[in-house]
Image (cartoon, rainbow, N blue to C red; front, side, top):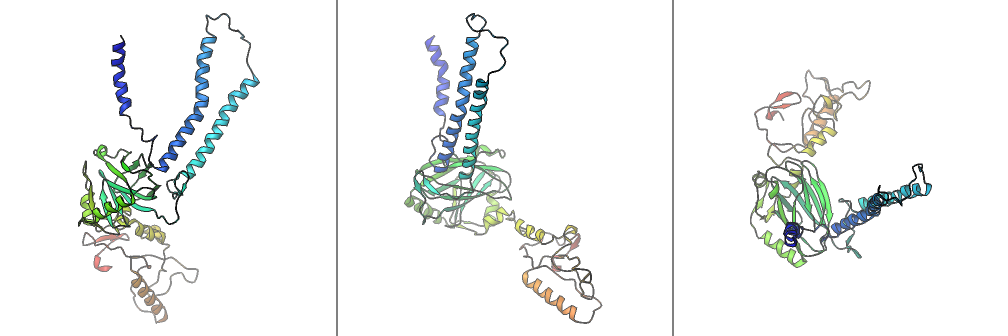
Length: 392
């Protein structure tokens, strides 16, 4: 019988032995503070949970039907002392949990810069954070080091006791960037940027992965995070720089194609504008960047919804439409460079000072930045109509 019990417990013991307790024994200060928050919150809740569970067993045993010695009082209905205990104790615990949650939410804000290396060790003023741009791809992680001009796939490294500033985005679908030993998870979303500040305090290799399901290759979307000494990190950077490969936009577009279980790779040179293009979803040729589109929308837009635009509408004689009764409507007929907008403004002023002409060229542009792209077709839809590229 004893052997049977031991054999029954073996699978449970094996399961417990395989558990990874990195969340409760992290190597980064931010993750350690999050661990402490979990422990304190759990202990506070157990102050109510354990007495309630114990009293439940006690009352069931004390007032069982067979216990004739127990006091029987069917008319009892109220006790002020008992009400105070029942309501005051949970209320105090809720207040304590609320205070801890409020302070923890602000102190452990992922966007908050690191103020200390570890408990009792303030951050030296001369230490600069390590900037790392993170891109979640299908199904791999791209890490860009703008300070050193290198990039890696599924291979991340940082020096011990130096703050790390992550800028995180995604190429296609939503993911979650998570290194349990370093800090809590934070989402990566296409067209958006999230940030995470953290620090690693102990050298070693740690596992990182996506904590949000993102498709067929999700299970293999893992990478190694290396906590290195300052000398080791310098060596790691030199090894990456020794790679002659260049990560430019064509190389990125090839990398962004879905692939599973991608091995670690490094690029010794990068396009400095690549991360901005990925974030603004315009890495492909012929696509307008989101920041350019938002700038156009902020200045009036390109359609009927944006008729209150930045340049006045002029009639055939070059006079401002509706100038007698106010500024009048305006429009953005095309996207022009600053030089073209200045030339258009000079031409408009000269037309207003000369005699009326039978016809005039409509005013072009509003000083908006011209996106650098080539139309994919001979004619494109622009302002509700068809326009040839040569008309720009």
